[in-house]
Length: 44
Image (tube, rainbow, N blue to C red; front, side, top):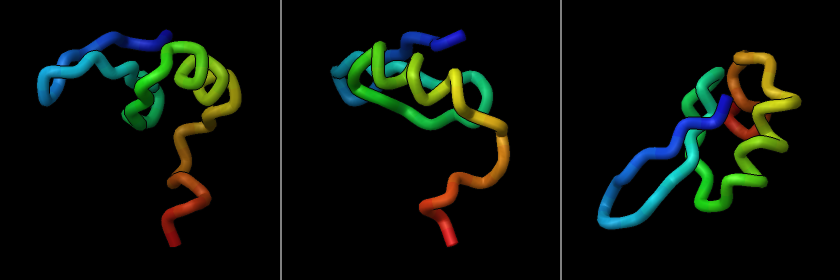
């Protein structure tokens, strides 16, 4: 489930699995549907 949060006077959508923030709810939902709670692949 995507969680809506307020930070820096803006609305963000957070992946409950890994905590990644998105500025678009549909992007967050798409990410969360594929998220496996491993370290994101872009962090190496």
